Length: 220
Image (cartoon, rainbow, N blue to C red; front, side, top):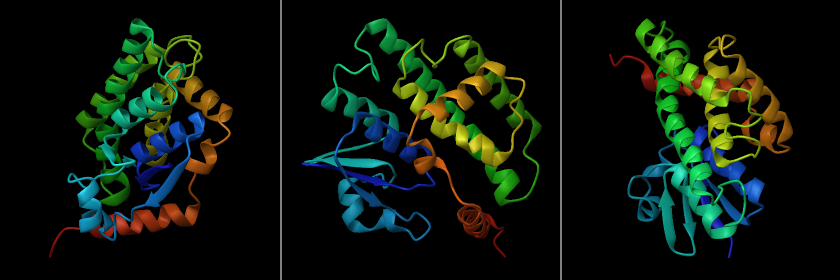
């Protein structure tokens, strides 16, 4: 049976899961959740995920949320021999380390996005510095590698690519991180599904910004 995937296109973690599904060619039922309309709070969705977050999957009664756990599960369950999540303990540990780095980057970028795009104020300088410090570490980890972990595409790449799209939205200058920038530009071009999943029209972006500004506007 196909896996039910509850997602929002505006959610980077959701898009990371969608890219994993496409890379592994897993049959799925896509179930979009409109976060701005509060669909994540509907009883039928909370029954699947009491944390009411996306992405969430339901694999024949097995419910799971948190994008990185989902990506790991999909690899283990449907492609255990795939290099997307390598079996070798050391390689897998390096993938897991990069996923943990990505887990920290997402909220940092989100905070800067909310300031610049949604509330139209400059983000605190210390927040920008903290994000850039973490990007510097990631830049050093990538080094001369083609992918984040060596010479094979892994779920670390897919998760970090989805997060990296937010840097574009926030218009944050990452030119100093040459390894990161080369990796981000090169790998996304290799994935035939990248643009379909991660690219938004000008109208879509403007609509998202307007909705977000309404949500984050000071209460009168």
